[in-house]
Image (cartoon, rainbow, N blue to C red; front, side, top):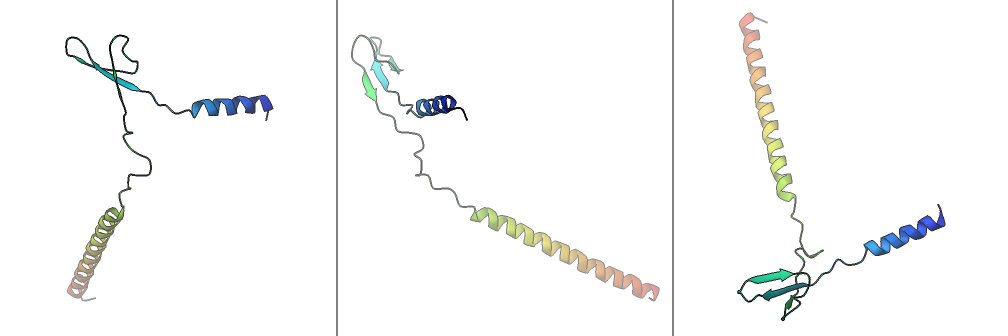
Amino acid sequence: MNPTLLRHLALLLLISCTPGHAEIYKWVDENGKLHFSDTPREEGEAETIDLEPAVKIGTVKPQSADHLFKKDFSKHQENQQQRESFAEKRKKEKGKSRTAYGL
């Protein structure tokens, strides 16, 4: 691969890995209306707000799939029992029809 291409790619990766952190400012204007912005207010004082991420990586416990497995397994067992009972019923019907014809 071309060395300059690799350099450009590495530079692009470094630039894209910078944190996307922006400060948020809050202030109330003279009419009592609350404002939020990513730039501080030119006149007057604005309060900086620290926001927590919506989801912290590694802190959310994944939901267990056990209940899905149990649900599917019980459904499978139910279907299996229905097939077996249907097969038994057909065997009995075939037995009755054979005895009726004297076979």
